[in-house]
Image (tube, rainbow, N blue to C red; front, side):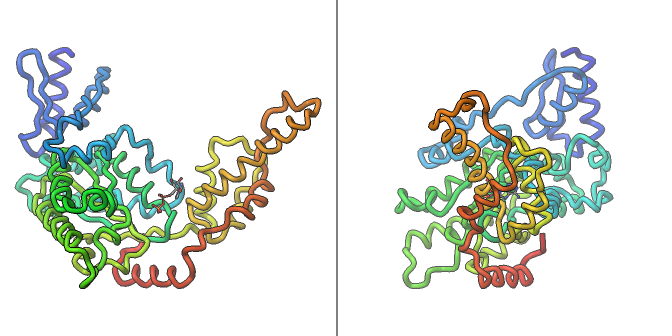
Amino acid sequence: LTRQKAEKVVGWARSHYLSSAVLPNIKGDRLIIPRESLDVAIERLKEQGIKTKRPSQNIKNLAKDEYERNFISAVVPPDEIGVKFDDIGALEDVKRTLDELVTLPMRRPELFSHGNLLRNGDVTLTQVVLRWPVAISGENEIVKKCLPCKGVLLFGPPGTGKTLLAKALATEAGANFISITGSTLTSKWFGDAEKLTKALFSFASRLAPVIIFVDEVDSLLGARGGAFEHEATRRMRNEFMAAWDGLRSKESQRILILGATNRPFDLDDAVIRRLPRRIYVDLPDAQNRMKILKILLAKENLESDFRFDELANSTEGYSGSDLKNLCIASAYRPVHELLEEEKKGGPCSQNTGLRPLRLDDFIQAKAKVSPSVSYDATSMNELRKWNEQYGEGG
Ligand code: ADP
């Protein structure tokens, strides 16, 4: 790295950052870059032809005690998650809303006083907010209001891609990802659930930017169990809420709680309030099923005029997850055929290889993989009603 190139990075940073706390600095022959501005500095360096990688955080060293160490294996760094928004079929509105929520309101760029950030093509808004909190938490009140919201709920029938969306959002935002469920905090640690909960939040604050994904948030924080609720569970819930509130009051903490549930109507008001943005992730219609199928089958060997539209039209009621299972079941058919052929020892059985997948394979496989029956019309109605009352559409 030459002095001239380092100065370019610093110059660029000075003209873009709002807060001096995250400015890179040249000290002697070294370019010192604060952690908050690392990603963007790496981008600038790349432009100058200098390839460099974000030094990987040593997650193990960030855990301070035995409780925090329990979460080490649950943390996935953003470059290891392996799912991007582009890997998710359909759900364009949901993806856009998530991008806007975790970021700044896309349609109000004037709120961002130093508009250069917004016009900078290679840094997305998600990245700006999750990665540069200090840069935007200046004195500007309006900018403060735009800080990412700390609680988002994804709700909808099972298998519609809520977990996938959460992972992709972490990738897009360059955030660490921790997935927890009720049993993460309660099962083997029954007596210690409270301490473990506290540790989750203290550990997370050192992992920031981080998305804590709470799958089946209804089972962790659902409506109070009344007189039958176990005392330890109640204390754990209270601890969770208290730690969460502490987090919400710290604007520069880049921690997002992203909850997912199929049963939002089981959540009590205290939880709903803490998840101010609630996004409905619905079953796909025919057009969206086609988009999902195209992604799921992108790398498969299909017959040349494969009728995606026909398959999409004949899979009413299938979720993204059902479609995936259908694709897997269909892909087995040519395999079974080949094995049968080999067993018979047919003359050309050795060299034929697998034949391309045909629409008929899917039609046949449908007999084995039907749409998830667990989500009947009554539950769908309940979900839609809840969406009308509490959701913001998706
Ligand atoms: P949920 O969390 O809503 O129950 P998941 O995200 O776990 O659903 O989905 C299960 C699997 O189904 C995913 O891992 C993915 O393979 C597939 N899937 C679901 N929705 C989509 C989608 N929109 N695009 C591509 N794959 C999908």
